[in-house]
Amino acid sequence: MATECVTKVELSISCQNLIDKDVGSKSDPLCVLLQNMGGDKWVELDRTEKIKNCQDPEFSKKLHIDYYFEKVQNLKFGIYDIDNKSVDLSDDDYLGGFECTLGQVVSSRKLIRPLELKKGKPAGKGMITITAEEINDNRCVVLEVEARNLDKKDLFGKSDPFLEFFKQGQDGKLQLAYRTEVIKNNLNPCWKPFSVSLQTFCNSDLNKPIKVSCYDKDEDTSSDLIGEFTCTTTQLLDVMNRAVEYDCIHPEKKQKKKNYKNSGVVKIKSCKIEAEYSFLDYIMGGCQINFTVGIDFTGSNGDPRSPDSLHYMSPNGLNQYLSAIWSVGQVIQDYDTDKLFPAFGFGAQVPPNFQVSHEFALNFNSNNPYCQGIQGIVEAYRMALPQVKLYGPTNFSPIINHVGRFASSAAQQGNASQYFVLLIITDGEITDLDQTRQSIVNCSRLPMSIIIIGVGQADFKAMEFLDGDNGVLKSLTGEAAARDIVQFVPFRNFENAPKEALAQSVLAEVPKQLVSYFKMLNLPPVQPPKQQPKAL
Image (tube, rainbow, N blue to C red; front, side):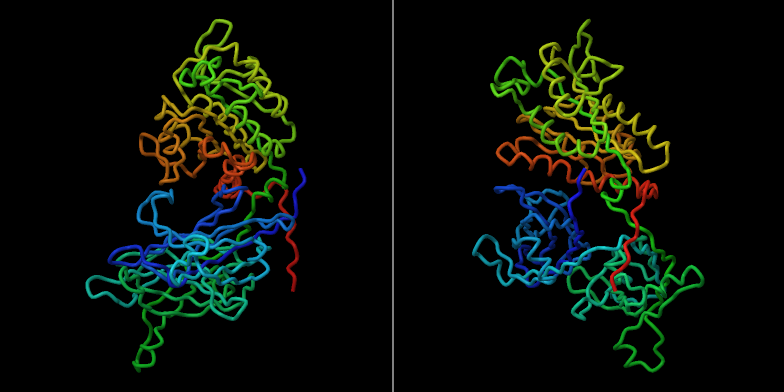
């Protein structure tokens, strides 16, 4: 597999003078990064966190994108006012956007542009600032921080503290590297452990000064400064040898009060530097992606001989099932060396005795369900279709558990050599939702991702629920998934789009999911990349 020349780019986003959409309070903005896939088809690549009640947000979460020198990558930055918990942005107010190419951002390094509600219509006085940085250091800093005896800032109740870490930007100005969560009503807070890429944190310079500010979060007005201090990453790392603590100093209080000591103490509980591996590091380090297909042969698809059936072959020999297999398979087969793909059907009565099966081999050979390449899957599907009787019910869990067993035995090897991707193509009428939820929660602890493509015009509420984007998927007993492993996409959204668009949208999550699994188990690539010497 040829890997093109890719540079990893990190984008820092801030906005000024956003328009106000909320009555009685300021907007709660978030920035989404979309990439154009041809025509008017845009796919989300990343998004920042939401900041409450703020017209001049500086987002802490950075946006990451791979930069291909040889491609024009058209981007859109969209600012939305988020008023609910759903991930879908169609029900949120649009505060403005900005379109450009990644090449423009990279060559400018810092771009300040007006936001537009639509072409030629400015979004009030709203502006966006995009700062680009090439990421060429795969290390990250992992920190755990707490504080004690912070000043009480609120009249009723204690302070609601959070920390901000700033580094010096290329232009000498302070740039936000990370913002912690807010801990409510607590003068002795202990923040969640967090990791930030070393480059984001201190430009990979362990002696570069870092400014740390502690604020009291105020929902209605801007936050109040409790105190601040300056340190370096080297000093923070010293926590391995001794206690590392800093007086949190409020400059005005220090000037006014003679015997002022501090406004609290910030203590570094732990600080270490770890390697952060990318999807390409794992693939180039020898990780195989094993691709399995599961096809829905249930009665709700309609009789394959009837033109309104989802399994009906059009005169050009295609239908939505085959289009989906081709589209996704073309991309994923490059990552699998033997090009042998197990393919299954579910929900049909199968010859010779026409018992209902929820995981039958498409080639009817249960001992060897492998098809040679994507072409082999297509041929097996065309052969099987006239021989089976579409039936029901629509059970997903048997095929998920089937792939899960393979993933489980691969996990026993204790290295990053194998990852499994199951593609389920379905009309969405699921019968065993509770068992499927349990199967997905079980598989979230295995080297496995599940892609579901919904064909036809059904209401895909159950599929969207399994996707878990609106919060963590839980089993019926309340057990939460260890990580998000399901990506659902309705095929109808892509009928008029370029053929690459479906695959790009469907596969967008897989690299993150693969990395999240190996990171969860602290597994490096089988052959880790050689650390490139830093340019001086």
